[in-house]
Amino acid sequence: TPDGEVQAVRNVDLTVKKGEILCIVGESGCGKTVMCRSVMKLLPPNAHVKSGEISLCGENITAYKRKKMEKLCGSKVSMVFQDPMLTLNPTIPVGKQITEAIIKNQKVSRDEAKKRAVEMLKLVGIPDAEQRYGLQPHFFSGGMRQRCVLAIALACDPEILFADEATTALDATVEAKILDLLLELREKTGISIVFISHDLGAVARIADRVAVMYAGKIVEVGTAEEIFYSPAHPYTWALLSSMPDLETKERLFSIPGTPPNMIFPPKGDAFAERNQYAMAVDYEEQPPFFKLSDTHYAATWLLHPNAPKVEMPETLKNRIARMKQKREEV
Figure 1 (cartoon, rainbow, N blue to C red):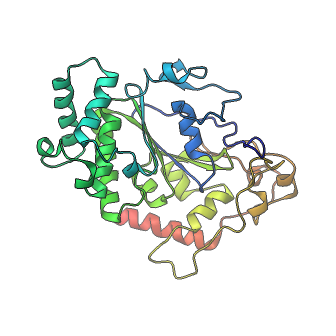
Figure 2 (figure 1 turned 30 degrees about the horizontal axis):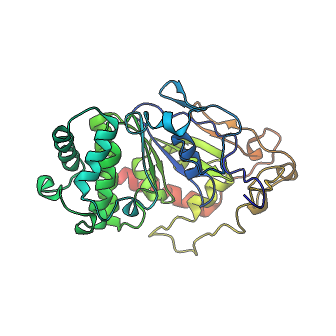
């Protein structure tokens, strides 16, 4: 940028398994979208991958240019972009937009592509798909447009789907239907899904694993149960504590301060300035990942053997206990 180099994503190391739903959570500006766009080769001209490797379905795509990447987009990997209701072209019928995606990536006739597009509309739950094929986006509700965007992303049977804030601006009922649809699609097709969201309730509903991101880095990763029931990083504690809860009578917790300026990233732990449990070492040295289980890792000096014993806040313990009780009742 004119002000200097923004280190939007730093040393991220993640693996997505076949048929898995990996959710990435964190505040706005922590690097979630840039990380996914890096894989898709959809970065703006002023951005670049300085080092590291991106492996997609066993293929090293780190050095791929946009033209070569286009052959993989759709068939291997696809993306539902942030604010997907603006993704659709308002002047072109929805069915034609799906057909274009199929013809672009698969060598089929236009009639075959149309047939496949109608099938995709049915798959994502659009009623009267044959009749609605020729309608422009403004004939659809917000939730149905969301489904149409999903149909475009899934039209060429990708192995990995990046869903960037796929439930943004939807009411709770429609959001629940979209989440159920993603789970259903995973069961039917075996697709892997990387789901980006601020909504921890939505994440809890569909995640197999959760990666917590802050200041361009993954700070904690584990199964959904480990992250929600046994969080280890103070930032994860803060995120869970700020989640609305019908039973909570206390004032909702808010994380003090703001994320750091990534033109000048902090020397030590990026969360130290906002962390009430920060120690002197947090300001001097970045913490490594500490292993809590075979699937659960957290980058915080609080897990060091020599660190003082610090437990999560009592209010968060009570909240987690209520979540466990609700789950048992369900």
